[in-house]
Image (cartoon, rainbow, N blue to C red; front, side, top):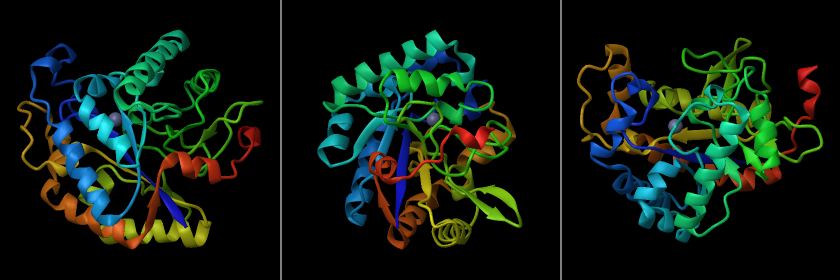
Length: 285
Ligand SMILES: [Zn+2]
């Protein structure tokens, strides 16, 4: 069972936790760290012998072209995370089309490879904006991994299927939701992010084993470059809850990731999307 491994490539100041503390117009005055962090991750992946998908912001690709090249040269998939982390449900369909076209042009230029995968910032495709999948299908994307089929304080589409589905009639677009595990009938977030970093590794190992052996499906896991960077600048004035979530266990992350990479088989998301047998749209009826 080969699981899907992904990295959401954004810098330390572009995360949802700080969106009310760090202004968009200040981004260009802040220290870029994502390029170096991507290099660390590439080394970690080489040591473990795994390939993965890097869902990257167009904004980041513009400023880190050598890192984009190396992602592709070292056998990984470069994919889109939109231009500047604007959540999809805040766009009109036309604005969304513009955003993904802009990001794709930048990413293809920087990486020198075709972009066929997309992940919405903060899993922002949900019951509010089903048109987003339509737009992705019209633009020729092969797959999206933009849905969190769970309730969370920042995101979630609780009715969505837990595994691959075809969200658009008469289209081959596959949506591959981020992993949840069932515990006493409830869906638990188990695909990475703060849950992986804050909770003991044993929880994630249990959850992924559960998905592989009980559901008999691949898991989809994600993390961010800033999570392997304990020395990143601290953001003063951010809410306590955001700081707790963002800074806990950063120093332990690389070790935890090594355990995770060693305990399971991992691969690129485009390969996983091609292997999956998606549910048809009937789930919504
Ligand atoms: Zn993101």
